[in-house]
Structures are given as structure tokens and as C-alpha cells.
Image 1 (cartoon, rainbow, N blue to C red):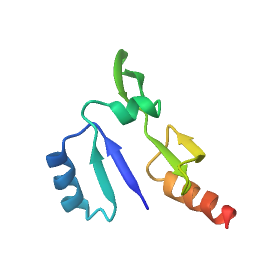
Image 2 (cartoon, helix red, strand yellow; image 1 turned 180 degrees about the horizontal axis):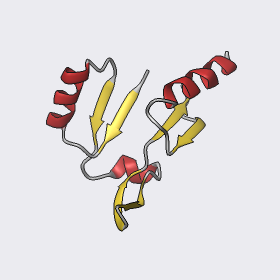
Image 3 (cartoon, rainbow, N blue to C red; image 1 turned 90 degrees about the vertical axis):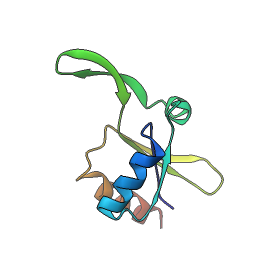
Image 4 (cartoon, rainbow, N blue to C red; image 1 turned 60 degrees about the horizontal axis):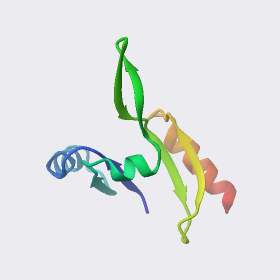
Length: 91
């Protein structure tokens, strides 16, 4: 199962899901509770200024809730292939 989480609103997620025909679950975390718990809400540099934001990351979590692998600072074009390779190696 794939679940995406961001601080964006549920309404924003709905528009994104419809526009891009997203086949997985998107959850809204406006209070950043999950983002903080997974350590992905961090200080970042944007155009020379320090801002708080989400470090795009992927977590592989097993059926018992154990984290098997963490991909930090992912690039959207590369991460699906990296993730699939990791999952295939587990099989």
C-alpha cells in the first residue's frame, strides 16, 4: 500500500488526486504531527533564506510497523525506481 502525507489541506489533495489521477491514498497533516514524528519537517534553505518545510522522503514499513528502509531527500523521477529495486531485492 502506498500512502502520501503532506501538510496540505484535504481539499488540495483532492484536486491533486483528480488532476494527476493518483492511485494511492493522500493524507493531510496540517498540524505536522506525522511529519514531526518521522523527522521530515526540517529547516531548509530556499533562495538563500532559512524556512521550515518537508524534506521529501519515502519510508518502507513492514506489516508490523517496522521501518525497513528510509529514502531521504528523494527526487521524484528517481525515487520510484529506487523503491521498486529495494522491494524486489526483499523478495
